Length: 51
Image (tube, rainbow, N blue to C red; front, side):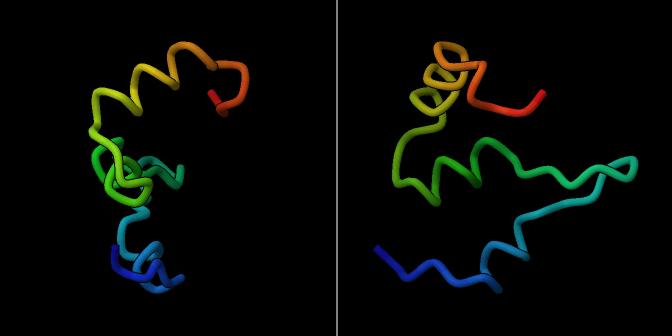
């Protein structure tokens, strides 16, 4: 697994309508899981994530 650096993270943060967002596929790659598993955990633990 490659090292996660602040520069790498900054490159995958997008600003859309004034909000900073990250794509689920980018987050899944950072955590080393498949996108569908990340999305499933977000659904199951929605109170832990910002709206």
